Amino acid sequence: MKSINWRGYRALAWLGQALLAIFVIFASVQGNWLNALALGFFLIASLVFVIRDDKLPTLFDCLFVVAALLNALGWVWGLFNMPGPYDEIVHCYTTFSITLALSFLVYSSMLNIFRNHTLLYLLTIASFGIAIGAVWEVIEWSAGKILSTEVIVSLDDTIIDLIMDSLGAGLAALISLWGLQEWTNPQTKSEYSLTSGGR
Image 1 (tube, rainbow, N blue to C red):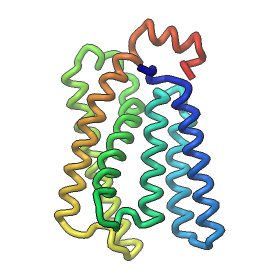
Image 2: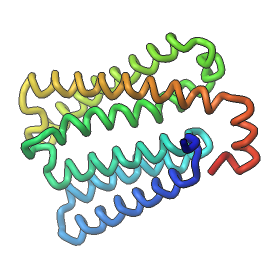
Image 3: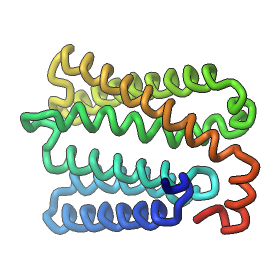
């Protein structure tokens, strides 16, 4: 099994960045400025995570870039409004990847403490992810009001989204625990420093 800091994850993250940049150019050439703006937002947001390469495991960077790509495709090409589970899958996956990345950044000073408090760590990360999902629903509601578009179809849609966000947060807590064990392992950390952070 690959390390959470395998160099290939970094290469895949940069490939995802290149794809997002191509999508921005494509939307701009078509004169679809709102789509270009949305894509540009996802490009910049994911670029911030990739650039902070010493603060996160490369796997988490890569997963976040994939989430940015999935959201960009959904917003720009209307996949969220198509029949099927695209919206639900992306909600779950996006909360999962954002929770993984942000939890390591937000709680970085406490990671060594959390290593010995597994249940507390799982509850903290899952709660953090559920809160992110709730904030995302507020952002969707606000976007619907500001852009005069139907982002949230119904209360049922919001509840399903929150359930999927909670599933993503729970999964992120479990994967984050695995990442925490590897990231804070003194032997693994020394191996990363010998290979320029494992990247």
